[in-house]
Image 1 (cartoon, rainbow, N blue to C red):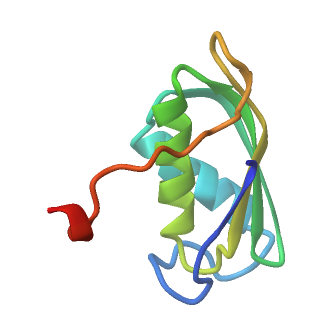
Image 2 (tube, rainbow, N blue to C red; image 1 turned 180 degrees about the vertical axis):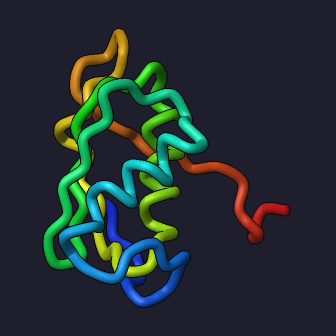
Length: 102
């Protein structure tokens, strides 16, 4: 699972043109770095692609959520990120408690 979708017109507005988007997104993530080294960000028509190295899977998850909360970001692709000790990112979501079980 390497692609995550978000609502494009909601979130923090960090950039006004597509040309400045990669740098602004990278700066926002690195300002509160969740544990990703050598982060590279590409942006085209609302789609973000990450490359780099994550210390743990949760670091990558936090970076995805941070990017998804930026206005103008519609999807985030993490196929270019390597997770330490685990090769390429391969998240597997587990069922957890829901409102129905509380």
